[in-house]
Image 1 (cartoon, rainbow, N blue to C red):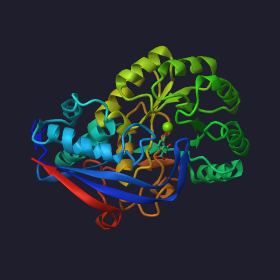
Image 2: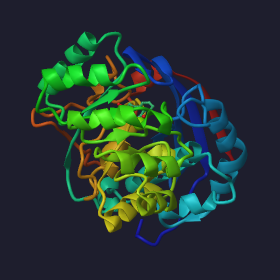
Image 3: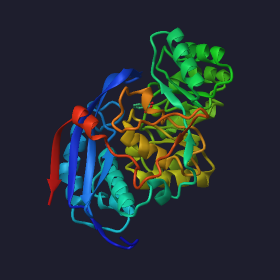
Image 4: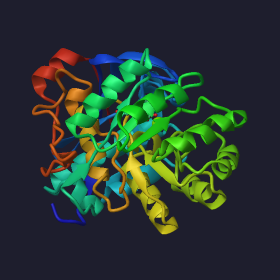
Length: 375
Ligand code: OSB
Ligand code: MG
């Protein structure tokens, strides 16, 4: 198929996948002990493209859930995608422009079309995006632990495994003490904190005290819909503010930089609507002279592959959250699993599209309730 040929999506599948986490993951939202998500497929040109939807069963990280994603794909987004002539995956998100928000649902379809497009053109997504690397440095995200000693044990283990940066989840009352314990145990470790919007500006003094801990950044300290107070907080502290939940579009990114609400952005493909919007946020950050990195949503290997592909763009200069498969899974949905290199980098798949597909036996074990939508 030549570059200008038209690709038409004839059908869409969603399959519920539930995978047990090796250990519960606690954030300021609550505790997760398994991951439930849609594996989304798009069919066209005689081939299938895959993507992982990053919504969960509860609307805690943002408004979306597995049920809203299903509703959107079945009733609003699927009908806008099926049968449309597509010559490049950048055309997918604009097909959905009449539908507000619901970016995780949009991203799942958009990313599946990127995978399909890569398979049709026999090219890895990293190459189609203009990525410049085939390995990327990675970090790890550590959930809230029962005691500072537990946290130090986890942080020490992950740092010894080679992760290039430690991200520590915090919430009010479990912040300075655990962070200080890790800083004492690992004086040279690149580390940061993620609050998942658990604080108000009135708590600025907590972040002023964090300035003494030499953190790379503090992620999403305040409400997800508030850039103004983030700008106020940034003016009161030396540690760079990084925004996650607050940045949904490249316009958000431009405004956040313009008013000084952050100096760094965590880009998550699902949160922003997929690869095309993620690349635009990356480009906006580069123009403004700010680094970005790729966040995670406890993905299986399908989502992990997508994260690695976007991380090959040159502005992703900070290690992200795409840890090895063994950080969360005894058995990943893909086989072989993603493995951390001894130098703290991970290989980006070089095969067509995402370069990985679900392992059929594992999908049989973890998957259920497949639904198909067509013309
Ligand atoms: O805020 O980055 C976050 C997981 C679920 C929801 C939100 C977040 C996270 C993580 C985990 O930090 C990152 C990962 O390892 O996938
Ligand atoms: Mg975060």
